[in-house]
Length: 74
Image 1 (cartoon, rainbow, N blue to C red):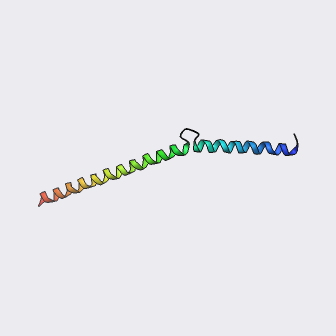
Image 2: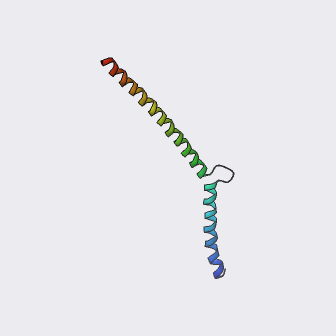
Image 3: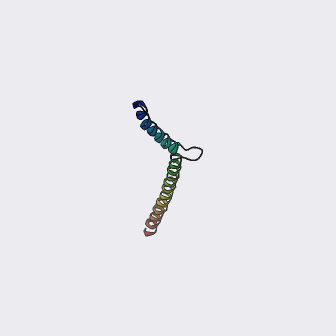
């Protein structure tokens, strides 16, 4: 093994490691980590939107209840 060969081996190991990491992120024929993360974010956004809707409906009900109490006091 000459000097050039000894330098090439660590570089090849690092390159292979980076390729494996990239495949793990992108996915090779199956959902990768990024697509799984995107799915989780989409589910979270849907949940947040749903909770905003429930909060808006609940605030409307409470407001109408307060208005009804004020009308009944008079």
